Length: 219
Image (cartoon, rainbow, N blue to C red):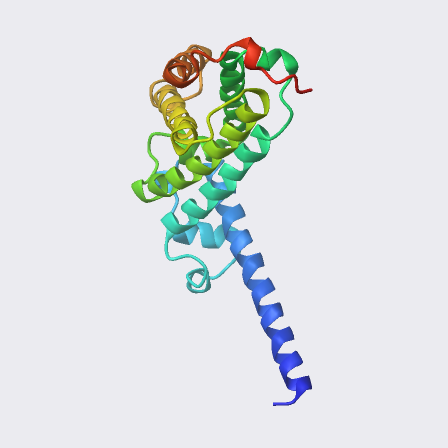
C-alpha cells in the first residue's frame, strides 16, 4: 500500500469517526430535549432517534438501547456538577466546614434546577436501575472533586476513607432530594434544609473536630 493510499484511508477513517461522534452527540442532545418535555418512562429509543433525525437502525450503531443513551447523558450531566463545584467558593461560604458543605449542596441544587433532565435521571425517583447503577460511578468522580475543594480550604486526611466520605455525602443528600421530587414534584426549600442536615450530620463524624484554625486562608 502506497503512502498516499494510507493517508487517504486514515483521512476517511477520521471523517467517519467525526460523523459518528456528531451523531452520538445528536442522540444525546435529543434525549436531553425529550427529558425536558416528558417523563423518562415515556421516552423510547425510537423517540430519541426521531428527535435526533437519525434512522433508528443507524442509531443502534452508537447506543444499544435507551438505557445506554440515558447512562451516557447522565455522565455528561455529572460533568456539569464537577464544573460547578470547581468554581471559586465565596469567602462567606467557607468560614467553617459546615458552611462549605452546605454551599456544595446549594451548588448541586442549582445544577438540578437548571437542568430538568438531571432531575429526572439522577433524583427523579423513576430512574431506570441500569442508569442509576452507572450514575453511582459518576458520583464517585464528583465526590473526588468535593474532596479536592475541601482540601483547598481545610487540612484533611489524604485517605481513601476520607474520599469515600464525600461520595457517601453525595448519596445521602441526593436521597433527600429524591424524596423531595417524589413527594413534592420539585426540590423544595425545606427538603434542601433536610439534605444539608443529613449530609453535615454524616460528615461530622469525619470533620467534627475540624476548626477554623485549620482553615487555609485561600482567596
